[in-house]
Length: 95
Image (tube, rainbow, N blue to C red):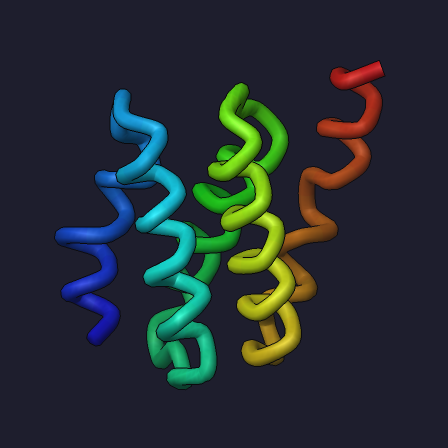
């Protein structure tokens, strides 16, 4: 399952089409209860979703990214650790 996410969902998180970015976040939200065996894949998922949450200009993308990030963090033990790695840097650059 992780390979499918890496090959087909992760690239669409950077799509020029907002609809595809939002749907990609939704897919990650839908698959978040599955256990990630590769920590690097989970880290990439969290980073890409955080990027959409912080930097995207489309509100539907931000909403779907927030939901996806919440479910990734609550369903994956390591997920919370990845959200804190660069959290302060994002807060300071946004102010």
